[in-house]
Image 1 (tube, rainbow, N blue to C red):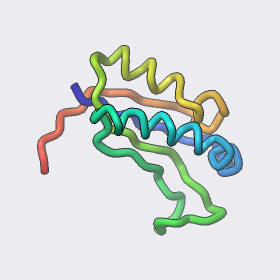
Image 2 (cartoon, rainbow, N blue to C red):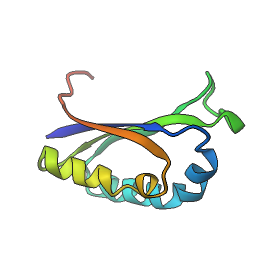
Image 3 (tube, rainbow, N blue to C red):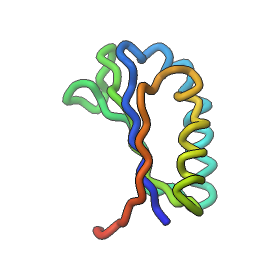
Image 4 (cartoon, rainbow, N blue to C red):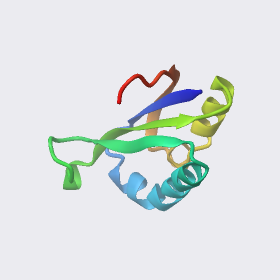
Length: 99
């Protein structure tokens, strides 16, 4: 089943986010290689694809996992969680309808 992982960053997290980004992306690449990643990306703080020093306010991942518990365990072990980038993380089942 698909699950939505929506994370909110702590204030002023850009330096931590940039330092941890390679490890975060490596996990997403693994999901992609397994054919389980639907989409992933950050929320820019400003209305721009490259927010520069304004940074980001969080991230969204939609991916396939065996269960809600598996999705939560995967989200809880994200390098951004361990580095203190995320203030909170919500994991919910997701049903893709379109496209």
